[in-house]
Image 1 (cartoon, rainbow, N blue to C red):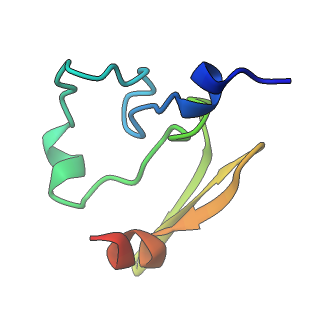
Image 2 (image 1 turned 120 degrees about the vertical axis):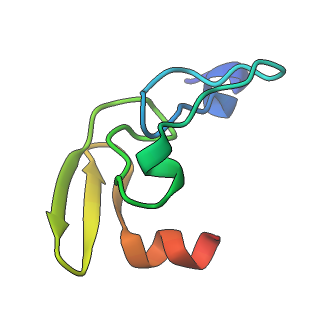
Length: 76
């Protein structure tokens, strides 16, 4: 069983580094402009399978499923 600390951990989807409250995490410029898809899962930090096409992208984590560019746009 996972502890609450592990369940609350978040990771930078562009670098894979664990996010620490109170410490700024740098997002690559291309990612902040919406030009780069996430490469790491925000929930577990694992590298994802990423497919980029002219009209968007999708990324798949083996544990947490698929996200795509249309879902990201809705979150903004």
